[in-house]
Image 1: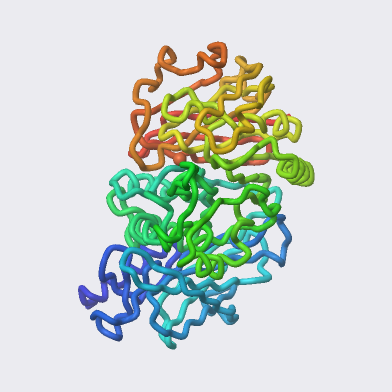
Image 2: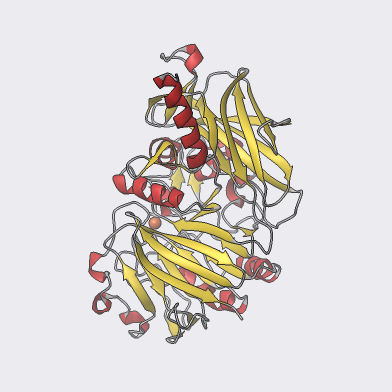
Length: 508
Ligand SMILES: [Fe+2]
């Protein structure tokens, strides 16, 4: 007869296998998001994992079969340990990946930690691979992931932003994201609060999105099998300089800007002419060493997945979207992909009828360029609600404020041509771009008065053109996209799993 312990082990293992791509985990939870090696006992001074192994997309842009790679990353306190990562096309593994580590201040415990990563190279597209992580000779975790799908293959992804601040809604959105069984997550920025510190990731991000359990109250083990893409956003830049302009100050937060040290995203963008401004001396060198070539190159990047292409941009207040070098790269990037579907992703909404961030319209300056280059859908966060525009063409007629970097009022007026025939059901072929704000990913909701109430939508500066089709601000939600050839399905799912909006978009 199977003992209760054995039964529990089997159930747990099977559960994790189905739930999150982990087939074995030998670590013991000792605190929120912290795990220890069980063989050493759970006592102070043992090696603590402050982030369990998680999958990252790595430096991949175009789809090249046999040249795909993925990154397995994790974080520990700064106790010496020997790690090995093995991988292979079956659970027998058989290959070994080189493990690198760099020290990084681990946060408000005032201790240094280690950020580890192992790049698994030369993979085929659209294949499941298995991996295992050993610590001092002991297997601590086994899991699997799937590489990016090649062209001609259907793709499902989830998109949301402004998540992970420490509340219950974080867990519910993570759970709904996991339920959608996505190939990857496309986050629209502010993926962790309050200040993008490594300690914020430890406290609010990893325990929710790489939870060892699954449920609306605990999150989901998504990150250990599913790549997570994101973009820089305002909460990554939490301090102010002498002129009150946003900046990252490493003297105030030694573990700031962890986006560039915890994440491993493509580096195919240009070196930004307006990189994230930083100051402070005490920990900046340590940050730069840990980030390496990721800072500031990960600010703007692109990648393909199946039949889709994603252009991901930094839209923070120091960005001038009319910058010629930036626009040249965007045009080159969008014209050199043969993807059927093109997405652009950045944090600050170009079009938004809520009050909270209404005047931060600078990224509208890119609309004509994106239209010329065949972009279909633009994804944003920042406004903590859901808004979907009708398909639209937009021609700005005054870019002065769009160019005024560092200011709060960047209203950018222009001329709208709105496709009123498209309804996403009977008329599915849009004329123009669809802009989606999906910033209801966890943090406190904004602008309750705009909830499905066009009378309260703020667009007086846009000559009251009714360009928004839906605005839902009374609940948290995320977007689920499924691309099947020339048909795209998008559903907005609330934190309880209810569909609150749905459209189909088709191509000729
Ligand atoms: Fe934001």
